[in-house]
Length: 316
Image (cartoon, rainbow, N blue to C red; front, side, top):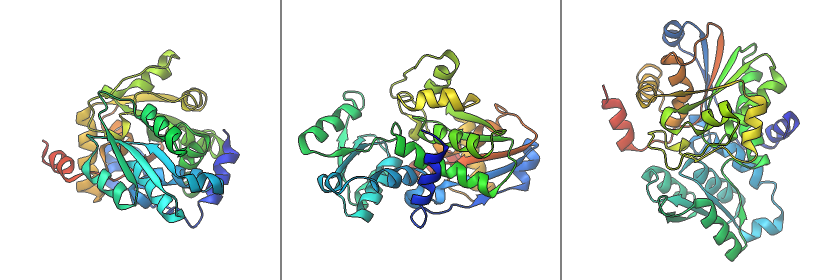
């Protein structure tokens, strides 16, 4: 996995993925004492960065693999992305999704044409269920983060940010399974090697933070965080060593800080961003990460259900 793979993915995504906008806020800059650039992947196709990795991976399948269909497992954003890409390319898609996934994400996944197989995350392993179904039906598995082509696709978001905004001192990126973080870090070191890359997780789901600091892979099953996109139990076999190699630091943020960041984006910038997508801003607003330079933040997605956004906006 290298910078050239991300450059190739960027070419593959031309005319397919949205080149998402970068937004700024004087109020935000004044509050944190830095110049902040927000890469708005909440405006990506499917509402999140996941489209990038899904398209980069599925578009490269052989005709035989496409004919057999695709299966994945996801709590929402990757599910929607795979369903959307498969619909575009005329491929049958099946998605293993937890029965407590946000209803809007399940509805969107089904709306894009996927067959959803629900499971109880307290009783079953989503990856094992997907592998069982793949073996039975011949599906090709497109995992949510631990795949070379998925990682390369996700890294194109950071590549675009650096191509548009030069001389960034720091990049803050959400971390769930580590696909976006490792891809972003590889892209950053390839185009702006002096830029520090920091991954951000919720405190109650900080398996990657612990793994990064101890050098041993840590697992946290079904963490009780509002940031549903980061409920992955651990980094992957591919993403863990990539995070160790390319990421400069990892930090975690409280649930209160995540809520404040979503509120700030909504009220001050008029942006709808899901809790997982607001982790980088949460780290900056809460002071968990401090800087006086030029900071890029990837807002990774905007797929949030009405119950959650109402609860967050009403929280004081």
